[in-house]
Length: 329
Ligand SMILES: NC(=O)c1ccc[n+]([C@@H]2O[C@H](COP(=O)([O-])OP(=O)(O)OC[C@H]3O[C@@H](n4cnc5c(N)ncnc54)[C@H](O)[C@@H]3O)[C@@H](O)[C@H]2O)c1
Ligand SMILES: O=C(O)C[C@H](O)C(=O)O
Image (cartoon, rainbow, N blue to C red; front, side, top):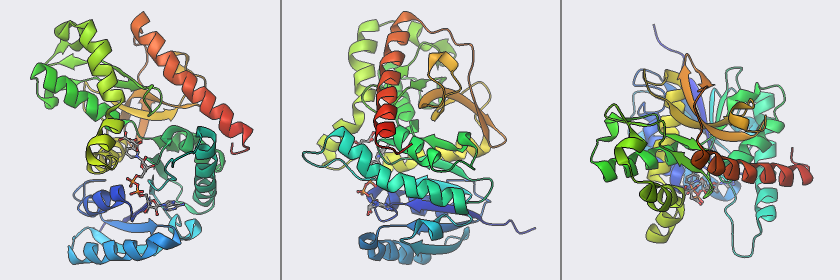
């Protein structure tokens, strides 16, 4: 039987993450090697020509799974029938811009996009927000989509999760494939907390195996948390291929499930678990199956972790207060 194609909407399609993402979606890395897709690309008017160029290249790849590409600058068109939405396009911080200005500018993007998702997306819509500040942009889009179940709005901390795996592997020599149960808590920002106290390295507790709290506090945590800035410094542009790869991982895991004995990190609406105020879109350890996720329960949080989780969550609280004051949620 021929499968119905899945409609995947990508915003910011002509940007650098978009360029690293679209070819892999079309070749089956988002949903699976047997799932046909239709791409719906959203750009601002100035980005349409470049998006058309990318669409020409996608056609030229003759991907067997790609069953159509539509391009629009109208969110109501781009989200029509969307089953998966990757909200990548965002307003970057420019010189002289305060955090409040950044949140307001992004409100102008994510509020109408949330409303368009509410009005036009498919009933099974799953949303991943990549564009920064990702957690709070997801909150803005969610607030504008009251008819969509709130748990369908998520933000990306999978890149941070993957960065943590990479750093642990580099330190210990244990291959990434044998590292499990790493967690990113909180915001996708420099306050995030990469936690290895529950992680396993080749079956052994990672914090015990590493046994080096100085490295943990002074090297591992800041390296992971500030990796985005380090990439910008080195490349002169923010992470693109690794961000695209993490976005594919996030959705693929959400749809197809976490491996037995492992979990992943996703920023999802809090249900109050681990003292994170309800409704904040904060990163947690989650397991997924049958297209749903659950926050891992019952983990013991030591003092070292508690302070760091609370600091990142406090930043999210402040961002929520700021967008509330701006009338965005
Ligand atoms: N969550 C993460 O882990 C993570 C990692 C890396 C980058 N990011 C963020 O992802 C975002 C995109 O990064 P990039 O490198 O692709 O940026 P980019 O500037 O190369 O591309 C952004 C694209 O979005 C488009 N755009 C802007 N407003 C739009 C709108 N209203 N509708 C549709 N498209 C719109 C722009 O025209 C541009 O083509 C940035 O906010 C970046 O900070 C997040
Ligand atoms: O775009 C940025 O500011 C950095 C990005 O969020 C990243 O983590 O690489």
